[in-house]
Length: 461
Ligand SMILES: Cc1cc2nc3c(=O)[nH]c(=O)nc-3n(C[C@H](O)[C@H](O)[C@H](O)COP(=O)(O)OP(=O)(O)OC[C@H]3O[C@@H](n4cnc5c(N)ncnc54)[C@H](O)[C@@H]3O)c2cc1C
Image (cartoon, rainbow, N blue to C red; front, top):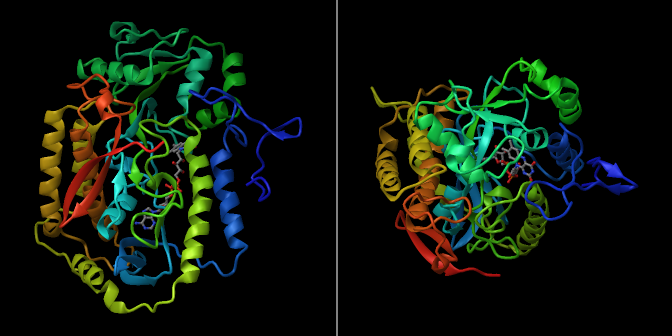
């Protein structure tokens, strides 16, 4: 990445490394306060554009992986510009469609992290691992509206500057839950999430259903020097930390589980590879900050090399019948016009509420059972939904396919969370608060005859 021009921050001629939260040594690289993400993405895009033989397609949403004789041979997609169904003939396929945090009402994701990779993998015959492990962060930004900034940035600043967490009555509350805050942060993340959610439940939340994070006691010069250019971005968003506290609360941020792959990043389906947040297993039951992009870059390269090797060896011809069944489903979806039927976004929105309420930061068997029943019912409602049938940029159509995948992925998360009757890492069961050493195992999920099958497997170290 450095040779491609990522411009990492440097110190004494070396790439600078800092200690990120939870790490035992300085190993986190960055570009500057605001531009690490854009720099990484821009560098990859620039590098791609240097290769004329790499064809890029925008506005195409993949709806199925096509298989033949147990091998991945291509994909079916919808061109959302004109609702045209597109098929791809591929020597190898890499699933790199990101995580699933959009399944939850509160999330830090961009609008398209709906867990499609996991559903695509299951439908094609690959299996998933660790689906119950969703990472929730305790104090993501809720309000006022924040544009163009990272909603999970508050944690390090709070530690550095002594930001105070206050409930809706402007009282400190962490001590009521066994933690301390202000100046001595003994409250671990789960405890902090629990405390915030309990205050809200007791009617002592802030207006947007969280609590306040307050820096008003910190002198302005100290704020300026710690926040650097971030402070001006906040001001541009109408947030003056010397005058007003912000509202924060727990949010779904990252998924540790995902598609199960070999060291070659190949799924159990020949020709189907995976990379990035779509992959499960590398981060165990919880992830340390900074490890996701690193994982995507390092294992992404491995996936790319092995997929290319595989594609070079393939000597078969694509036949359109391989994709027939998926094309027919897509055609049926495109013509869904049910008078009085709900638009797909209505069900998506309900699913997000169900997942947040029943499979969010704190889970119980009863709530998970309730979620599972509703998700299975929603799956049956898919074909009674109604689409607008708009010719160009039919967002209903996009939402419908996204919802179809979201339901499969949500079912996998809930079923796995229900089976893991213990608390471990990011998976917190209020009815099983302890860690059970007998469950130091991975859980895999596969699909057989449209039903999910779960299995415990030994942890490979
Ligand atoms: C606010 C925020 C801050 C973060 N900060 C850090 C950090 O500081 N350090 C760190 O290591 N990690 C961080 N992470 C996590 C990290 O950014 C992600 O894990 C990582 O970017 C995932 O990369 P990816 O390529 O796997 O997926 P993504 O970057 O999510 O890309 C997936 C792509 O697939 C596309 N896609 C999805 N479904 C389909 C479909 N059906 N058909 C076609 N395309 C599809 C999407 O549009 C998207 O372009 C952060 C995450 C968030 C949300």
